[in-house]
Length: 108
Length: 117
Image 1 (cartoon, each protein chain N blue to C red):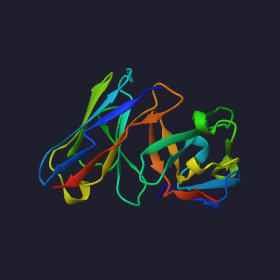
Image 2 (image 1 turned 90 degrees about the vertical axis):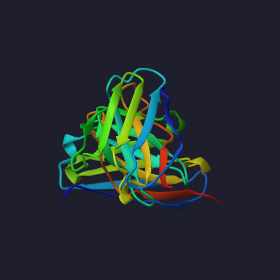
Image 3 (image 1 turned 135 degrees about the horizontal axis):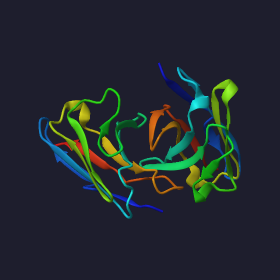
């Protein structure tokens, strides 16, 4: 099973600041790493797929990078609606598909 | 507009059964492989099961193998999850999600399953 480790667990930032989230895989997932945003009481929403491609309707302030085992999600300037939990996910080595434990981006 | 709507959740005793449904609209379910993903209260996301477009290939996370069965009816644009011999640790919100290459593009709003005596 490919384990995805997200860091940090919590990121405390102010609106307008830059957020950098990390996801490390226990073995290579090539470029096939996705990022999701989840707000309280809501379903997850796909942000980034194939490591760096923005899903439909996702603002340009969200960007992803990486390949192999190390991936990064950057939110260039936090908007109030961006405070949420973010999960990475892989389905390259599967089954099972796996998710990271999540990073909570909270208001400082 | 694409929509996935889950139903069938509720309170069930340990050892009991439930059948979840996921109704798709705004797209043809037959064109997409589908998944069930769950989230225990206050916890992260866990992939549960996958079914290919034709229903002939299915995968499960180890913890539900032999207890859960995924199925689909493309004619009814619907996905199902039959859950038997339920355990306390199956308590979660269950989401259906479309498989878009290597990611989950569309999600339902989820249905809560509570296993408790």
